[in-house]
Image 1 (cartoon, rainbow, N blue to C red):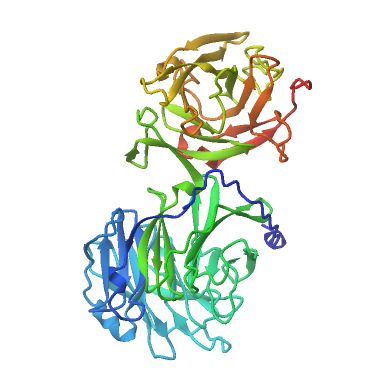
Image 2 (cartoon, rainbow, N blue to C red; image 1 turned 90 degrees about the horizontal axis):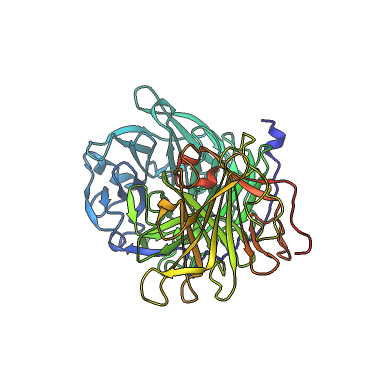
Length: 578
C-alpha cells in the first residue's frame, strides 16, 4: 500500500443515532473495591480477562506481597490466586504492574522498570493458570535516545501474537519511546527495537496493537494531553482522533475492539475528576482513509475517589462487557450491550437464541439502518434469519399496513424477478431479482395470551418464485414451520416488530450462503403509500428512497451478519405519485 495513501485522513464527525442508547450505556454490573483499600499507593494496576478459562486475572503490586488474584467475571468475587513462586523478588522493584494474555493462552506479567530508580524491567510468563511463573526478561531497558530523559517501562503493557511471533510493547512516565520485545525460540524475550512516539507520555497509559508487529493505538498524558493516535510500527502517525470526539482531558487508556461491523476505540479518563469512558468507531477504506464517528454517549462518572493516571480497560466478547480498573479506586464490570445492540425481553422466550454458548431469553440484534423514527436490526442462527424493526411499524389499529421483506437467495445468479408479488403497494419494481418475499399484515393478529397488552402475532404470506410466477402460502400462527413468524408489540410495549424467517423449504430455503435483502413498510388500504424503506438513502428524512438494498455474504458465519454487509444502489421503480 502506498505510504502516501496511508496518511490520508478524513475526519467525519457524523453523530450516531442514539435511538438504541439508554441513559446508562456503560451500566455497572458489579464494582469491587477490596483490592484498593490497603492504604498503599496505587496497590492494584493490572487486569486481564482470560477467554480460555473465563476468569479475571488481577495483578497487585504489594500488600502483603505481589500476587495475581483469580476472580469470577460474573460477580467480581475472588476465587483464588496464581502460583506466585519467585514473584516476591520484584517487590523491591515496585512490585507487579500490568498483566496480559496472548493468543496462545500464555499469561505475561511485568513490574515497573525505571533507570533513575535502578529497577530492571522484568517480565514473567505463565504457560496457563495452573503453572509456575518463569522469568523471561530481566534487563535495564535503554533506548539510546539522549532526548529520552527517563527510561520508564511497565506502566503501559501489551502482548500480542503466539509462538515466536509474540510481541510485547511497553512504555511509561516521561518516556518518548515504546520498547518492543519479541519472543525467541527459547521462549525468552529479546529487544526487537524502540518506537519513537510524538511527545513524551503519549504512550504512557495505553498501547493496543492492531496486529502483531504492526500498527499501534496509543494514549497517555503528562504536561500535555495528547490525543489518541494510531501509529505505524516505526512511529509514523497515521491518524489522530480529533479533539472533542472522545473524552476531554487525558486518556488513561484506550483499547481497540470489534463488535459486528464496527471497529471501536474506547478510552477511559482516570487522570481527572471525570473518571469517564467514551467509545467511538473508525473505518478505514482501501486507500487508507480513516473516518472517526461518535458511538454513543460518554459514561457517567464512574468514581469520585482518588485521581490517578493508572487505568485499564479489557473487553469480554462473550458477554459484551468491559472490565475497568480505575487506579486507586475500583475494578468494575460494565455492560456494553446498549451501545450497539437492542435487547428485547419476551416472556414467551420464543425468540430466544444462543449466543457464545450462553442461552439468554432474549434476542440480540445488530443495528443496520435508521429511517426517521424506525430502526432496522438483524442477526441469524443456523435455522432462522431474525429481523427487528423498532418504532411505529406494524402496530396500527384501524389501518391496513403491510411489512415486506424481500430476499434474493442467489445474488450471483439470474433467478428471480424484480416484479413484486402483489399490487397492494405502489412499488412497481424491486431493486434486485427477488425469489422470496415475506409479507406480514398489521391488524389481522391474535393474542398470544388473554392479557390485552401482551405481544401479538401477525398473519401474512410467504411468496416464492417458481421461475415464471409467484406461489404463496399463508402464515397462520406463531409457528416457524409456516416459513416465517412475527411478534409485534402494542401501544404499551416497545413498538418493536420481531420477525423470524426460516432457513427451510417453507421459508428462505436451505442452501443459502449469501442474500440480497430489502425491507419496506407500506399502507395497503388506499394508495399503497410507502411509509418506510430499509435501507434509505435520503439523509434529510423528507421522502422514501427505494433504490438501495443490503447484501449479506457468508450467511452462516456467525451471529453478526453486519460483518459482511454491503449497501448497494440501483434504479428505482416507485410510483412518483406517492
